[in-house]
Image (cartoon, rainbow, N blue to C red):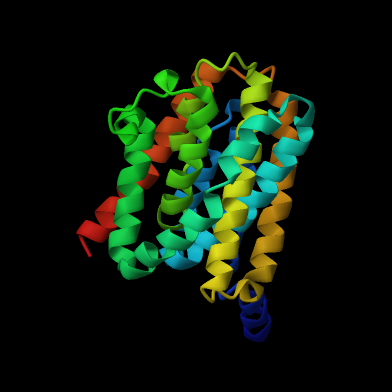
Length: 262
């Protein structure tokens, strides 16, 4: 490929080199499969990969668009199982608390934010109960838990970016099937990412500069969701979880180590 063509292609994808774009495409596809088969970890894994190449305040809104597409397709695929009452309560405080949280995200340096996300990924992978700060989701009134949770996640969503592991435990003891849990969680996350996109857009982030990359990653996310849907009843969950925990740990350690050694 000639230099001029390479530069034009890079500009179309936000200045990223073609090998990086290819890696992000593969990550979006693989993590969509992950989310569609076990319900969690896909979004946080994709964000961790994106942070290897992008500033946090760029990676988080771009990740929000890709995850909006991924979760929308998953929620649509499982729409007969989605609990709309849960989704409705969860959505009420997302946007107002997201607007409050954007100030925190913008006040942190990229190095601190990237390291904080790396630590969050490690906790979500190995000690998810620590993220709840002693709260026991199963003891919280089901009619209130998602209303409060929407406010909490709306606030931290714009600085952490991927809050699926924080949301997942609150589906305990609702008597939902696996399909209902994955579908309802996808619908909740869809609205969470939508509110995050609105907040970042209002704060001045220019999504149009990244339309090429967003289009490509969105295609990968939809395709991965379709493949994951086919695997939902066939996957060996124990092996799958072991693999994702290993990969996610390596990426998170890379994020934290890079900032500590910088």
